[in-house]
Length: 179
Image 1 (cartoon, rainbow, N blue to C red):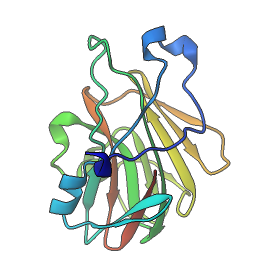
Image 2 (cartoon, rainbow, N blue to C red):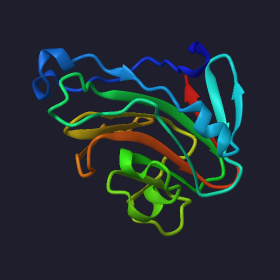
Image 3 (cartoon, rainbow, N blue to C red):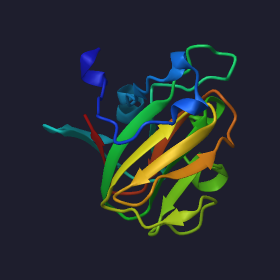
Image 4 (cartoon, helix red, strand yellow):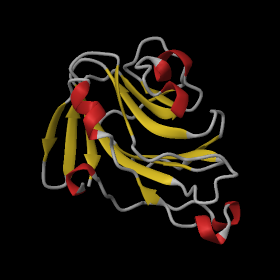
């Protein structure tokens, strides 16, 4: 269904030395619209971006795309590019497939990703990133993060595969996911 697929242009690519030739193509992640609707996110389709406004929190949206285990030959990296406004309390990261229904996973148990500076508590490190363009790429070996004009940050794989990219917000957090 084309209305449920988001596309974006990647700012950076994973180094080719870290992947075999079959895995060099990054997949542009799509957001699970059905799950976002069920969880009460207000969804607005604009010309360059699709906005997901969080009704209350913690509430999470995640990618339909999954990075599988190393034995899964077609598991290429997935990319998500977004911009966050509204409430300054939010996070992004990697969530194992087995935990996608736990809205508080990133906040209470997450091992990969960041909390925004406005987020109180939580287990992820904090980073000043609110109102910046953010691009994240999840591969079998790591999560690469580009926030605004800052250098790329790499976090080694610390979650169980298969896994997805996730965005977690609280009341009035607006995730603008680039098309």
